[in-house]
Length: 319
Image (tube, rainbow, N blue to C red; front, side):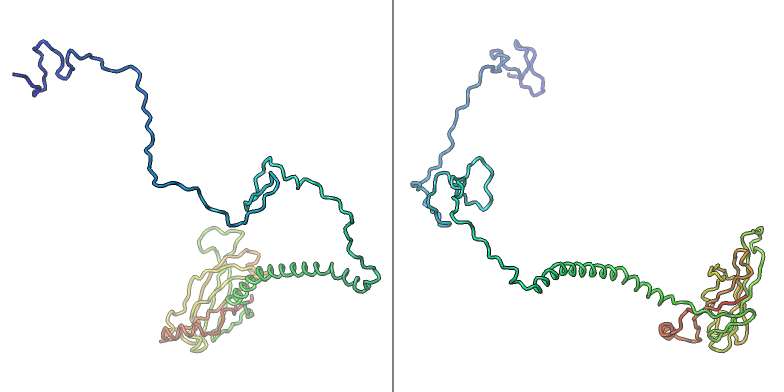
């Protein structure tokens, strides 16, 4: 009975104790060939049989027509692009000098000076140098005008839009102790020095001032104009201004509570340099706001767009 390697273990108890996968004893252990390799046999490419017999091409040049044969070496290139630079010499005919002419070239006829009128010659000499100058002047003038329009046009438009939205103020001067009346409302303003309301030590470079403004409605139209002033500030004779802050406003918020002939106080405070504390004046810009009782939103918007009144009137109270 022959043993098989089913258990993975080759037989070791026979005369041949080699491994199961080893070659037999009569086969040499080294079977590598170390001699020269035979040269490859060249094989011809497969030939493709072509039936029939090939004929030479019979195409003839139709255009451009053939030129007569010239001397040997003449360049007959028909390329549409320039020929490349080479060592080729030009044809002999191109190097041959031109034969001398027996007769000199005819000169153009000369017109005697007497036949040209003096007025015409003077006019030509005067017009020729003037035309280029005139053309140059027109070009320069057009360029300058274009630059002026391109730069000045937007500037003028912007300035006009600014002046329309913020026209020049119309100043109404109010003498000391007097009341200024505007749009059915009477205004008064007084100024007095006060100490620093914050409780800090006094400083030599600033002076606190208090403004007391009273407003009085003169009629029903004045009663509905109970809005706060659009602007209040200090100003001096040199045109300098200082801002103020509203501290207290006794004006009733409801127009129905605003009584005709009753003064309502507005208190404000500001800081100015001590040298001008005795001469600064109050500039008050009344508001154009009208609070009409029981007015619909549609009528309010309509009045806002159709009201011709501008916010450019200022009351200046002298001291």
